[in-house]
Length: 109
Image (cartoon, rainbow, N blue to C red; front, side, top):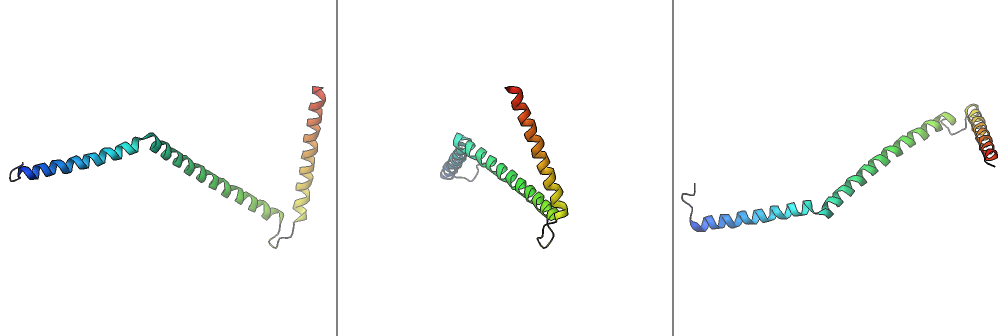
């Protein structure tokens, strides 16, 4: 196996392998260091939050665009035949909810 190699070549090979091993051990030390682990975990969480927020933004934007398309014509003019029923329903909902709220306040006294 070591035929034809001089002791100096063998020693140089050992020194080179020790240096490679030292570099590998340093890399492992960095990878398992608590600050590195926390940094990697927080980067992963940030990435997940950014991706989720982006998806939520797209979904809300689509919903707003859809509602806008239902309530306004292509030229931007309001479609009163659709806006009035929505406004009436919203007012009715507010009245019902405020009536419930005042009934609850009356029961607590």
